[in-house]
Length: 158
Image 1 (cartoon, rainbow, N blue to C red):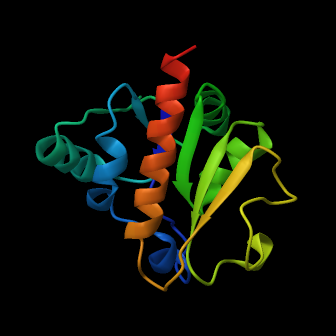
Image 2: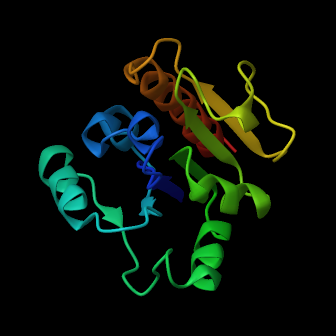
Image 3: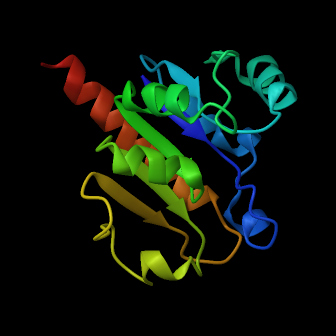
């Protein structure tokens, strides 16, 4: 199961960190993956549109509110095989729990991520996927989709 989160609630940096769910199609269309919504805040419309456009159901436990029930959210994140998310609190929860996390970073990320490299000293199980050009998420999405497809294929061969 792969948990996903696509937007940041940060009022100043959020827009450059967020990737609208409609751009996630190459990731969401990978066969053999169950996606789980780890996004905080209201996102029912985006989940519905995702299902209508791509035919992909993103599982959601409506009893878990990441903003008000951190214990349940931590349990949910810990149950994931992988978390794919933009730079928001979800990556910190999953990273602190030792869950494998793939974090999508803008071309000019927050200071804690540095300016280059795929790893971070903060969370050993985290991998960083960086924008090469400001505002261009397509190459990042394509790379993650390719890596996820390879991961699914290698797990099927076990």
